[in-house]
Image (cartoon, rainbow over all chains, first blue to last red):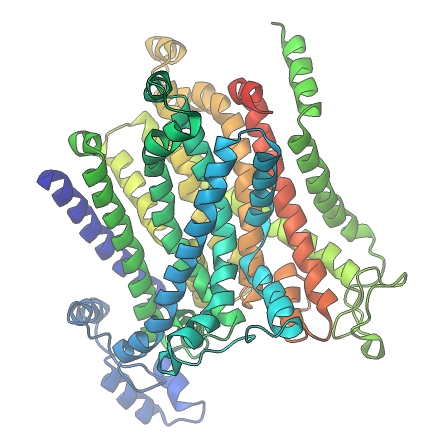
Length: 316
Length: 286
């Protein structure tokens, strides 16, 4: 167990190093110098040079990379070129919107998908199954940002139940804040719920053919008793992998959805960073998101090792 | 079973597979609209007609007009062309780079090269695809070509992993062993014996990736990082529609439906191809 976890941890660390290198280098080749961008087109070349040295832009590339990583390890992301505040503060301000949004969507996706997949599998080939599968086919095909627009049209403009965008802040109270996140979370969750329901169904159907299910029926359990007591637990393993993967989809999908609803989260921060050439902000947000994704993958692996001893022995 | 009998068997199975047939019909609408747009659209999709803006659907403008009075139906036809081109080239890049990588990795199983290729793949997978695409377009600037590159890069590991996995199981087959005994090299075996046997699998996956690429292109265009105006694109049309949604809901409705119909069609087609390709699932499907 320890060897397995250690192996996964080393792989986690290597992925992070590789990811930070890629992010650093990719953004290094962005055309446009942040210093001249900040000073405007009429700036004095000497002033630009002074700002470059103040921002540390005139140091050799490997020193800048190492400086950036060393800073990251201390939670120091550097100063934003445009906001002139620590990037860590900007991220902390935004993450309290993006993370709850992602978790809210993940919860919705699971709450919708699990019963849908279980019912479809339990009543295989029935009208219910066909309806659920048909709905998930359409759910997978709907772009979440378009679904978001339809939700705004129906629930904000016509029914006036939810606001069309913006975020009151957590200080306005838990319920108003959650209400503002509801439409974005639903829009994010629907396509993912469709995928998850399909995985749940097929995973359950695979399990229903296993020998232990026949034994369970033979010892007198009804079909649904056997399904609830034995099949479900075994079917959950592949489903949990997908739930883990969905975290990263939802986190990244949030970038687009935040723009639909004008939510001041990490996604909007990235876009503002891109348009204002504030590379240090873009770089930091991207590394934070990638770190979150890699860490969740690691946690899913650990959860597996705890749930399924076979994985520990063979490694992966 | 003769080749002819097998072929008629597949054709009859295809005709009796409703999802597959629905997929063919829906995907055909998309392809025909895209191809037809080269020679004919009901109106000039770029012609501005400010007095005739935001018209609801009518006989003259089947899907209505947008905020510049442009004909939405014609724009959607040209948008289909853009979506198709971006998705086609992006999936092509993924296949052309990914399949050789995967085949090579499988032929050198366990070697450093194999390990290196697969870890590189893991790294791309760890990046949320959309984030990667946004970063790439941020670096190289928005536009259809950069959208293609961004989506294409993410397709590489998909095909590399798929072809490696499929090739690994083929390498243990007797006919591959026979080819090795006959003195054929690894590359030649990969090209002559492995590749032809995984083509079906690649086509199925290609269809799925094609539909994902269309969704990705729409998302990038929606945030302004895809095809640039005046070239119509579905995602861009939706972005334009957003601020006018209470005034002109039709502007949001039709481009969105175009995406849904196309993606749905391609997904059904992909599922159908998979069923037909794998007789086991053909029997167990309703």
